[in-house]
Image 1 (tube, rainbow, N blue to C red):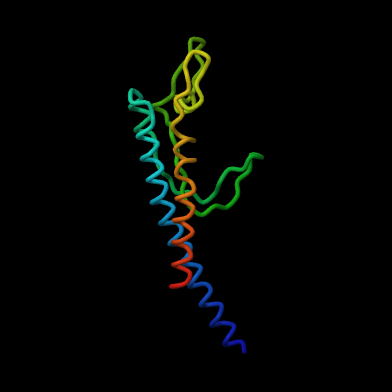
Image 2 (spheres, helix red, strand yellow):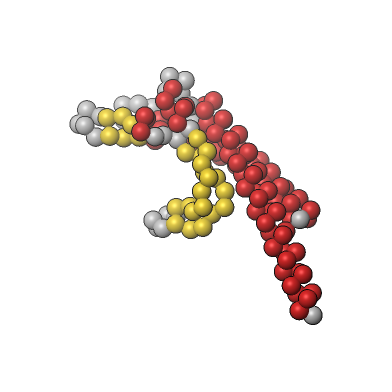
Length: 138
């Protein structure tokens, strides 16, 4: 009986490892597609912003309460040190966020959230299919 349980545990670990690897690989592919859509829809004259859009691996995800939770996958980010802008009072702001939401002196040029929302259903479906296929094929 314990031999059956150990074989079942080994099989489950194998399937889980395959599903996690497939999910992470498909998540990276989908994130790259989303990042490319963001680059295509970002304002054309914002070269540094376009160059700053990237996909990064992550093991944790920030929560709304300021903490972190474990996470398997990747995140798409925009903005870095090259995209910081300074206002007339000397305050620094991230141009990626200003372009997305606009200011009182500049209209919004939404590229980040709109691209994400447009591709999210397809990405979720593709990731789910990859995980399910990997689990079944183990």
